[in-house]
Amino acid sequence: MLTTIEVLSLKSYGYAGDNATLFASATNFSTALQAGTVLQEQSTPIDMFIISKLNADRNAEIISSLKTTKKLIVMIDHLASKSLQYLITTQLQKHALHDIEVIYFTPEYEKLTTIFDEFAMEQTGFDAESLVNKIR
Image 1 (cartoon, rainbow, N blue to C red):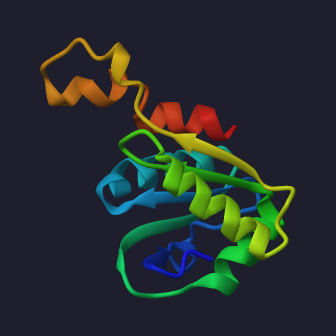
Image 2 (tube, rainbow, N blue to C red):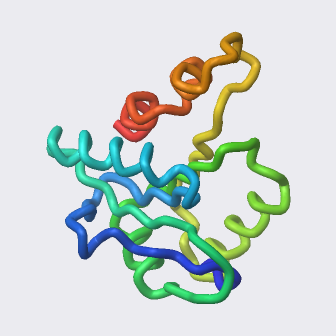
């Protein structure tokens, strides 16, 4: 699907399910992994893919996951640009995946009042607990 980036599937590590498909950037790996673990423990497993770097293609695996889950959650630590939204929309259409719900999970920076890193993610709703709540 996303032919210009390398994507690591976490299925072989036990993160597989039919409740949602999560794309997370490599910088958000820890938060995504925490949320995935909580969801597994709550019997709400998800397929997880980590976007790591340029130059690979995992179309078949991603398409298969989306056909099963019908929900794509894109976790990025900034607002989803129009070009990213366009890329995802056109790739979904290209593969006839018209009934996929796409959710962009991004920080709510307007809520940020702390200068301490350890509280910033929670304050902006960009922590594992918030991600779990978004997926359920």
